[in-house]
Image (cartoon, rainbow, N blue to C red):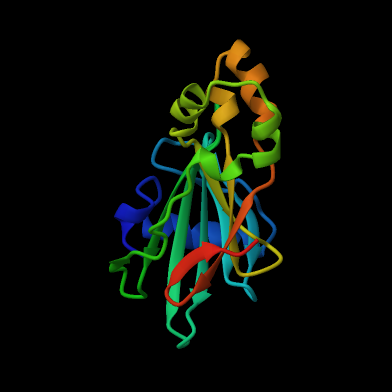
Length: 186
């Protein structure tokens, strides 16, 4: 993996972090900011690793297989505070970028239609707010999928939150790899 993909850790630091985790020695490697970091989850069978690159950043790396058995490396970087926000990238094994997640969801996809139909609400006002997306991604530990959570309500005023919060589902959207794209599966 090129250093530019996880710039806070050198190749040597990534190697040491993995080796120390095999010995159950957490927090034994320091990043380029001189902060200790650790592996949060390592699953060699499902090819998933989750680790902190800084105190406020979580990186997840997983290898998926396409239908033709071509491996794909997926990397999620998540800022943890004040609200979880993520980016996701996909790579071939030679670290060339690829696009597999072209349909990034918006907050509208969490809208509970029956709640909206029963609400006395200005739809233009609601659509203006739902046009923003504050998303966090994570890899499912049970299945080869990506879970996407919506954090829009965490960015709303107290007044707007009271109106909008009950109109949105708090369940994550589940995306699975199908025909060389991640698509909503549930």
